Length: 295
Image 1 (cartoon, rainbow, N blue to C red):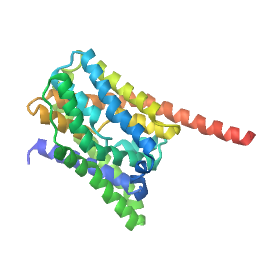
Image 2 (image 1 turned 120 degrees about the vertical axis):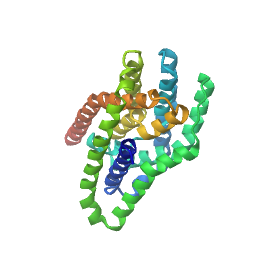
Image 3 (image 1 turned 90 degrees about the vertical axis):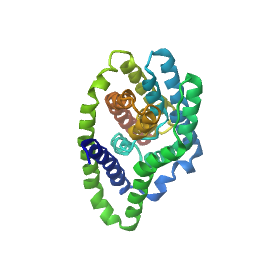
């Protein structure tokens, strides 16, 4: 096994451990939460799978992106929720039901949404694009749905063990994720740096901010759900996006480099959003309690 294969294996394992660690604290009913709330499900799918591809299309026609970057942007626009989202969502005040439900729903719908959207984009741009439902399903199944099912099952069968194992397993997964990403970023740094200064960086900042704003506006009346949908609409599954990019440009480093650049940009852009959402949520709780006390 060479270094590249070892890094890839560590990255996949880190994602699986991160999802299992979170799922060990989740309840089975959380996975089906959005399917029992069709209004919230429709708003989430509208935000992530319809409006964001349109935003990507607008950016492609506004900026003079290279073809692999265009594909990477559309791949990000249709990829499901990233596995690390639940941890960030709960830290920002999101609820378990909505977060897990969103993760499951977005992953399931991605097997249909991704191939269809990529075909529509290829027609609009005149660039041959493809991603078979089978490849999408395999990535989503191995990195999201199967680890979720394993964690939730363990939690239901042996809750005491699940409670003890959740924290350490999540921390191991997060540490492994960081350790495996660092060499990838180091190896890809020439391609990533080549995208800075040609408008790609600015376009991705706009894309990340648009995702946060659109998700928050469409998240419904509950501030916690709006916060989570904003994060989910902006941040997408990098492994799925890279798989789509490499399926269309197998010998191009710019496409996966663009995805990694967006992961970095999205992480920095989300910091003030999470802080603002936390303060807004605390203010809402305080005002609600104050009004109840007066009543």
